[in-house]
Structure formats: C-alpha cells, structure tokens
Amino acid sequence: MLLHRRLHGHSGDGEGGDRGFSAEEELRLPDLTAVEPSGPIVLNEEQEAAFQSIRTLTKTGKPEAVLLQGVTGSGKTQVYLRLVQGNTEPGRRAMVLVPEIVLTPQMMRRFSACFGDQVAMLHSSLRMTERYDQWKRIRRGEVQVVLGTRSAIFAPLKNVGLIVLDEEQESSYQSENPPRYHTRDVAKYLCARDKSTLVLGSATWRWRPPGTRSMGSITRRCCAGDITGRHCRRCWWRT
Image 1: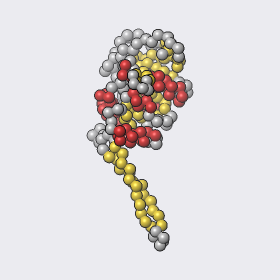
Image 2: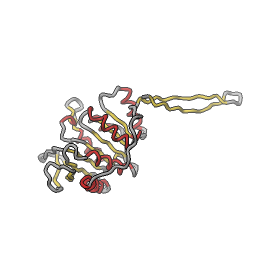
Image 3: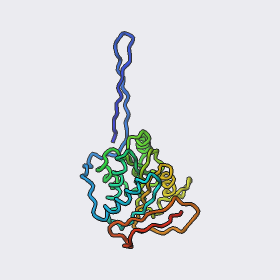
Image 4: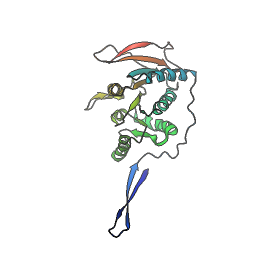
C-alpha cells in the first residue's frame, strides 16, 4: 500500500504572480483497511489484577521489570493492550516484541484495531523500502507503538515508557550473528535509560542463576491459567 503525502507551496515568478509546486512522498505501509476498530479493552478479574499491579510499576519514575506469567490463551495480549493504552496517554511510547515473524500479522491486526495507524511494524521479512518507510515514521515521532521481532528493539523510538517481550524465554530473541546480542539485554538498557518498564511475558519462565550484572528486581504477576498457581513473589533478577 502506498500512502501519498503532498506538500504544497508557492513562489514568485518575477511578475507578481505565483508559481505552484508540490512534493509527494510515498510510504509503503501495510494495508490495514480491512481491520475494523475494536471496542474498549475489557479484562477479566485476573487480567485486571495483573494490569493494575504492573500499571503501578510504570508510575514509579524509575526502571522496573515485571514477569507476566500465564499459559497460552490466558489473555496476556489483552493485558499488553491495556498497558500500551495506559502508557501512551501521557505521551510515552511503547515497544511490543514477539519471538517469530509468523506472529506479527496477528499481533499487528490486534494492535492496529486499538491504535490505528499509530502502530509501526518492523521485521526482517519486510522489503528494504518498507522497513525504511516504517523507520522514517518512527524517527519522525509519527507512531506510538513499535511492533516487531528482535531487530525492532533498535528502532529510533523516543520517550519509551514500556517494552514488552512476549514469550521472552524463546531462544530467537538472541542473535547469533554479528552484532551478537540478546534482545532482553538491549531492552534492559533502554528501560534504564528512559526510566521505563520492561514486561516479560512467558508461559514457561525459567529461573536464571545469579550472574555479574543486574537491572534490579523483577516482580512476578500471574495471569489466568498460571502454570504454577502460586501467589506473586519478588525475586532478584540477574543475567
């Protein structure tokens, strides 16, 4: 899909008249005309409890990390949507990352239904021209949400208030090719820089043994259908 933008102006022709000129920009963006706007985001009791507790962390004004644990189909995406909605209201922006490209179309439809053209998508299967156009929109501050796979973590998004890594336990978040990086580590850096909140969504979260560096503590929040069924707890997070 090509989005046309026209810039109009005029200049003198030396005889007191005007000479018109125009410049046109064509952006290659996904065709979302078939996506119908969604209604209000409704959460069940467990989702609302998780949302409220995470929402509290986003208001501390300092870097935070939280684990949202729930089995597939427990409604973690609904919580993400509400968190992004609450994050963008004060002018902050959000990133939502998924482990596989095959998941991006479905997530793009769900987020576009809520946020319209304020969502940009980045992943390696897009043509270079498509990625460049999305990159331009992000850099110019025309979007509120960046959705994509691990490479989207490097998008030039300013004033980031929330980063979501869905199914954060997946190995695809780690790049084995130069430059080697783990998306979670870059996300932690961005959250420390912008004093924002990192949400790690997982159905099978694995405890990581102590290492050498830490961002702080990670708060565990349970969604409906939690595997362990335990109450929320706090633990020291090191990677």
